[in-house]
Amino acid sequence: MPDPQIVYLNGEFLPLANAKISVLDRGFIYGDGVYEVIPVYARKPFRMPHHLKRLQYSLDGIRLANPHADRWEALIADLVARQPFDDQAVYLQVTRGVAKRDHAFPQGVAPTVFMMSNPLVLPTSEQVERGVAVVTAQDNRWLRCDLKTTSLLGNVLMRQLAVDQGAVETVMFRDGHLTEASASNVLIVRDGVILAPPKDNQILPGITYDATLDIAHDIGAPVEVRAIAHAEAMSAQEMWLSSSSKEVLAVTHIDGRRFGDGVPGPLFRRVWAAFQQRKKG
Image (cartoon, rainbow, N blue to C red; front, side, top):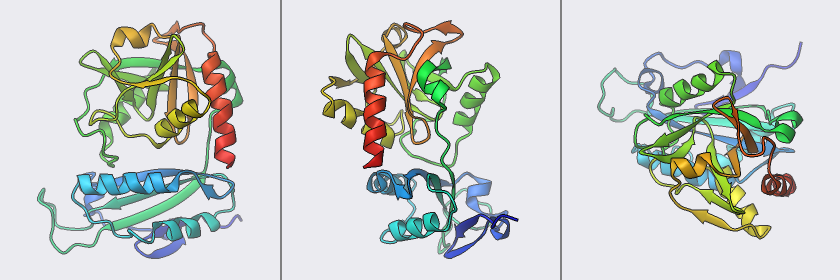
C-alpha cells in the first residue's frame, strides 16, 4: 500500500485520515477563516513571499492574528518534503477556532491551522493549444472579494454554473464592468495592449495576475490596469484566465460562441512561454 498522505494540523504532522477537527470549529459553522493555495514546482514554492503577504492581508481583513507569522516558510517546506511528488499545490487554512456557536468573535480561542499538499494539476496541453470555454454572469457576491476567505459559496455557485454548461469558468461582470472569474482572475487584450481590472475590493489580488503582468512588462508588452467595460471585454481580441492552478490560459469560446479568432492569440502564446521559463527559476 502507498504511504498515507501527510498533512499538518495544529502543530502536528500526521496522516490525513487521522486529522480531525471539532464540529464547532468556526470554519465549519461560519466559514470564518482564510486560506491560500501555493503552487510548488520541483519542490520549490512559487512566489511564496507574495502568498504569505496576501495571507496576512486576509487575516488582517477578518481581524484574526497570524498564528505562524515567522514560521510559515519552514512549515511549508517541511510539508512539501513529506510528499512523494515534486510539483504540488499547498493548501493552508486558518480559522477562528473552536467555540460555542455565536456570531461574535470568541475570546481566548486558539485558531485552527490546517495544511495539506496535493499533486499540482495544470491545464492540459490541449487546453493550452486550443483554449477553453467560459460562460458569463452577473457578479452577485459580497463586496470583500479581495479577502481570500473560506466563505466561498458565491464562487462555488458560479463555478457550478460553468460546469453545468460544459465550460471551465464563469467570467463575471458587476455594474457593467469586468471583475473576475469564479476561481481565476481575468485579463483581456485589445489592440495589442493587455488590460487588467484594478485590484480593488471586487476581485482577489491574484498572485498569478501579478506574475502575468510582471512577465508582460519583461517581454515589452504594454499593460493598462483600469476598469474594463462589458462591451470592451466581449469585443477584445484575446481573453485570459490566470490562477495558481491555471497559470495563464486563453479563452476561445464564451457563452457557447467562438471568441476572437477561436484560437489562443499571439500575445497569449508569448506570455505563456515566458511564464513556463519564469516558474523554473
